Length: 171
Image (cartoon, rainbow, N blue to C red; front, side, top):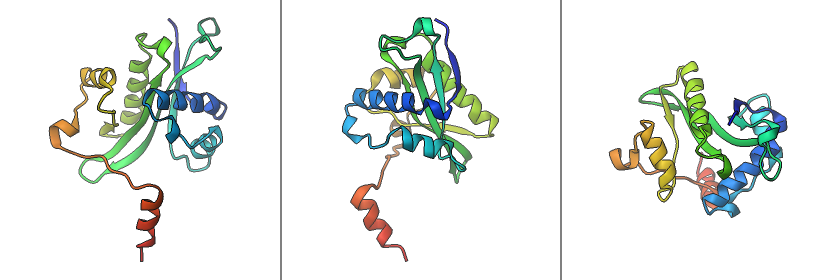
């Protein structure tokens, strides 16, 4: 099946928001999604973008049963390692179920890696839910390292009241 991978445009944000919700449903956390296409447009396409995104698109003749031609995405942003330097963090990689196994996921992550190398990044990092064995196996087959198993890192977060409380402790 023919498909293209290209940089997302503001008009793709409705499709990206749709696929973010589909991914959240797959990850059993749809209630966690609090953004819409408007925030995606503001945060990804304003004067200081917080993220970049690639989309996988199929021709009209291969559109989904619901009529979509945007059928996958990879959303990523830059971060910095004080040990290694420039790093890309991939927040999401998603391909609609009916398009899996056709090389789109591989093409999306390979393109993220290519962008990372073009920007002189030394690492591509991301997280995977512990029960998501198909994705974990895919990434490991491509050479990813499981840092939880190898080095014992825990991925932590402050949000909501905990973030508010911590911010109030600033001088």
